Image (cartoon, rainbow, N blue to C red; front, top):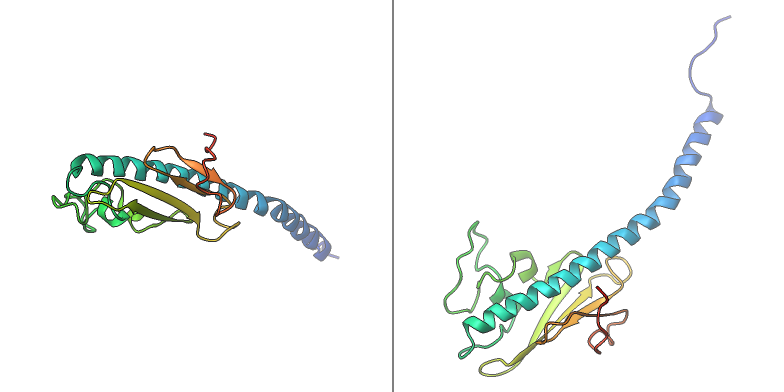
Length: 164
């Protein structure tokens, strides 16, 4: 009689069960890590937009003030080299093209201005694209450049300073 080589059905089922248990433990941790990375990226993006608004305001202080939208802060085209638009309408090259679209890293970015002319202030809001999947915190900033965060959309800009 020959001895057969290989694994029995029971042994294979045990290995599959162990893999499923490990996956059940690891997937929620992976999701939390991804959300934390998205939130960190969103806070950094708000800082980047603050810097872009500050640069834009320095260039167009007497005519436009702060940029009315993110498109005005981003590149004017998808070209490899960003060439700033001297009129400041589109493509001032102060922020990257992905951020200028208003969607990046699971967050949606919007900006509003205090109308002028010139525009005298702005508000930036970063909100999760899908709450509790891409992020669970909202971030915002005003002309003062302080990044604020909150766990609810209504309270996002109430002055709660983001602990960094």
